[in-house]
Length: 235
Image (cartoon, rainbow, N blue to C red; front, top):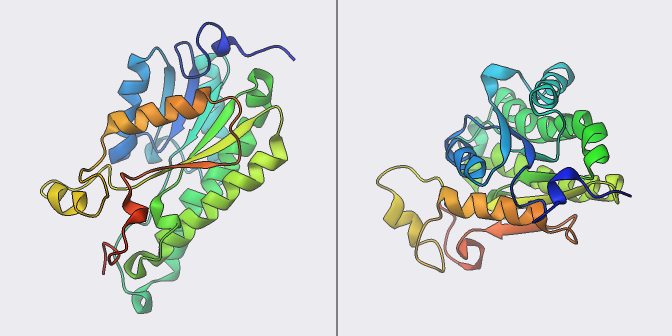
């Protein structure tokens, strides 16, 4: 089969990549998108104002917009998420579960489903923006942890379902978009003693986009957060 347009002269991580980034108005990806564009990527970034990706109609609409603007699609970055708010398990409401699972799980699935014809044409790649919360039990963030764990499984299920034409990979950041004034505390949670940056995330996305022998796997980008044996950050 022919190699995709963006694979010429440098691979998928180089310039000329046509990408859709959902959740692009969120704190982390809002900072990442300009860095991808600086690499020569053509990026359509969408947020909640552009449509509810937890429903089929909204998911199809954001994909259609990206394909119309870009003339095709090489990379889909599923970064839409919601429901990251501390709440004791006893106080979690049904609406909290719907919010977290809807944007993160349904959104990732439905946008990928809508994008598949275009990604198959380009032999493209899906990058799931997961979270180390999907690998750790944080009692005060139960809906978020559950949603991210389910998304990590989607990475593997979808990778198997759509191979070999399309690759599906995961990226699980740790403390990279921390609140102002919390940098030192969050840095102490890591083995490397620092928080991550938007540039770290952009580098990882570009790497995964160009790693043509990687599928169904997740890259943990947490400075060694998962290596630490201390208490969860919400404890």
